[in-house]
Image 1 (cartoon, rainbow, N blue to C red):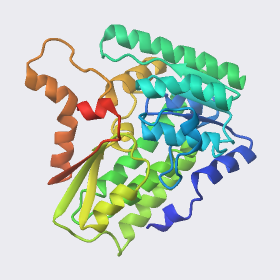
Image 2: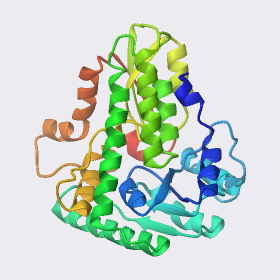
Image 3: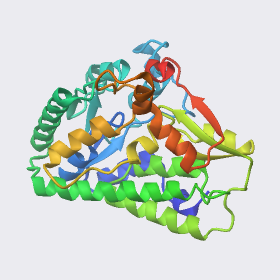
Image 4: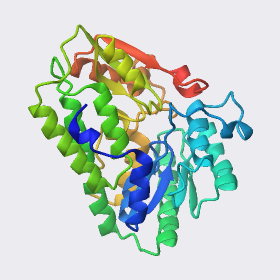
Length: 336
């Protein structure tokens, strides 16, 4: 494991340290809450994750066991005080289970601030207008919570910061195109998890340190015959990636919620910032919960709208093996 990654404390310690420094820290689910709005409001967005090493116990009193284990795990951690440093909670309608967690989390954990973001399931002009309205409401909500105005100038500055962050992560991914890769899949996922627990400036510093160390290392992953792409939803623990890599594979690419989906594209910062954010988060995040058929395209063109990015990853990273990681009861990914 790279020293730049090992030197960071665990996520709960990071959150409590940010709280001690006087930062407002708000937990959020999924890829769709616009991180740039958090940053422009001087709020640290803290991605809510589960814990594979913590048995789900307390959450079983509130949630049925045939519910998404990732959501159950994260709520279980909340009930056990692992997220007691959070100042608030933001929940998108990314799926029905996450949508229902908005009221459950509010009722039982009573965050000081909360907001729900509705997300269209289609990509068209009407959906984009609606989604921009949702982001405008979120902007006003954050301004009320922090007492700070989010100006277009602040929002554009935040977009630049997050675009730089995305660019750095893409550079980390590029290090995996080599054969053998200069950084492992497990190390990449560990970097992503830590980066989503930090202010964007600190996250970018971590990414740069990882890039510099990986480029100069002499103890990188060994060359193997299997170059694997992992497809999945909330893969929030490197244990699966470790199993594959310890078994003799190089995990060189992914299509995951904690991975390429959030770093693959920048936000166009040339025009109205809210327009740009709405278009990016609705169009560019390749999540199976979004229906992408724009007109009556032939079947092959419809497939390309949904899956061409995976074909591109296979070519760009010289992938010859694929592992599908489907969280139990995750209908959207199971159907794909």
